[in-house]
Amino acid sequence: MPFEKELEVALAAAAVAGGLVRELYQQFVAIPDAPADISTAADRDAQELILREIQRAFPGDALCAEEPTATLAAAPRAGPRLWIVDPIDGSRGFAVKNGEFCVMIAFVHERRIEVGVVLEPTTERLTFAARGTGCWQCKRPCADRKACYVSATASLDTAVVVQSRSRTALESPVVKLLKPARVVETYSAGVKLARVATGEVDLYANIYPAFHDWDICAGHILVEEAGGRVTTLTGAEIGYGGDGNKQRGGMLASNGAIHQSTLSRLESIAATM
Image (cartoon, rainbow, N blue to C red; front, side, top):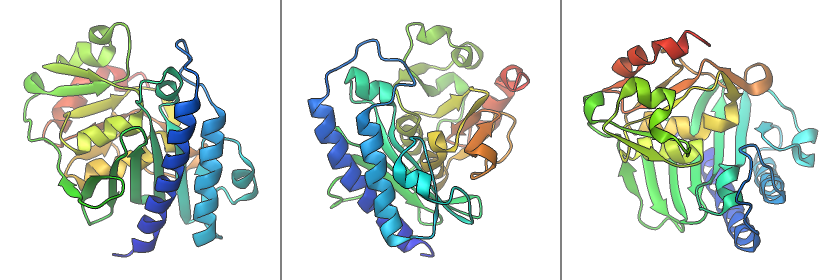
């Protein structure tokens, strides 16, 4: 496997950070009305831990991460070898203490994702993938891993959509247009993408006109290696490490079988981006 060491480092960094996040989470006092963009000391501490682990193994690599920490500030921000990190994706899930958050670590080579790791600290559920080797899941420590595959759902009429938590789940633009059989809600894009990869849900649509590489990168490769498809809402490929590490045009992750029909139903949203 071409990037075997990178996967090993990503898994090790996720394990160490996951332990720290779990400890801080147990001590954290819940904030019931936490905003979506909340950042905590746990975010920053976990990020520093991850970035230092990466730098020890690959000192010359570029780093991209969400929090403004010292290690990130001192590192190159762009290059052919780039690590993209979200130390706590779903910070609101951390802050309200419902457990819906994850550690996301991805390695990108020449703007193409090669490795992705998504660890859910509260359950120790670990989902990971490397290009060309499939998607896998296990509980930490990773003794017995199992291969992950997307669902076989062939129609939107029977599809399960995952989206962020809201008070009006059935009124979201995506649900109104897709009319799925069922809606599942959770914080964290990484958790949502992992659920698509394991076939627990059939699709996830991100309709934000602008977001960042770290919001989706690690989860992206999980879906593809599990047999699914990930594109913008216009069906274009998604690259990483571009200007400002920003993504535009939304994102659709699906089992592949219903990808084109979903894109067609979401044309009105895509046209506004």
